[in-house]
Image 1 (cartoon, helix red, strand yellow):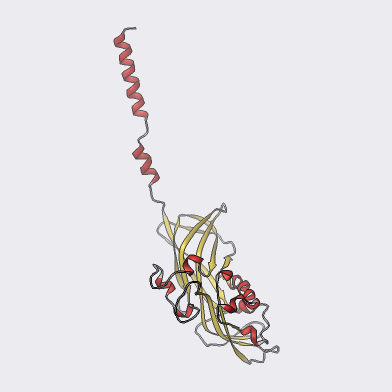
Image 2 (image 1 turned 90 degrees about the horizontal axis):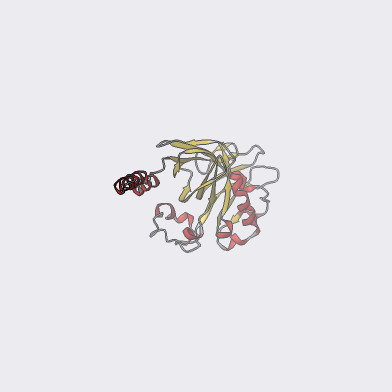
Length: 259
C-alpha cells in the first residue's frame, strides 16, 4: 500500500473520531437544564377537637364535655420535608411559616414535579434562625412578631415556638368553671418534629398542590392535671426546662392531623 493511501486512511480516521467526540458544551446544557417544579401550600385550620375555631374568646366543648376557649394560638413551622414514594426525602430548609388563627393558607415553596407520600416538618425554629435578629433577617416578616418573643425584645435563643393561651374548664366534673392558661413553648430542647400520616399526592409543573391539615389545640392538655394551678402556666424561658414543658412539647405532634 502506497504512502498516499495510508495518509488518506489516517485523515479519514481522525475525521471520524472528531465527529463522534461529545461536545462538552452540550453536556453542560443538559446538566444545567432546570428541574420542573410546582408549588406546595399548607391549608391549616385551627380546631378544638371537632370544632373549627372561628374566632378568639369563643367557648368550644369537646366530646368529653370540657370547655376550651382561645385568646391566641400561633405556631412556627419550619424545615419542611416532602417524602417521595421510594422513601427519599426532599428538604425545603429555608421555609418559615407563622401559623395564626386569621390565616389558613401558607405557601411552603417550590417542589420538584413528582409523586409523594408524606410531609414532615418542625415546630419551632432551628438554632440558626433562633439566633437571628428579626429586623435584620431576610425572614423578618415571619420573625418580627413580638408575641412570639420571650420578653419585650427579640434576643438570641429568645423566640417562642408555640404560643397558645385561653381558658379551660379545670373541674373534674366538667361543671364549666373556666380558668386561664398560658402555654409558651420554646428553647432548643423543645424543637419538635412532626411526621404527618402518609397520604399520596402529586406535584404538577406550574400547578399548586394543597396539603389540608388541622391544628387541634385540645391535644395540648393530654395527660395534664388541669385541677393543679401550676399546670396552667408555662410563660418564660426558665419554665421551659420543667416537666410540664416536656409534657406539652410531647403533645405538640398530636395536634397536627390531616383534614
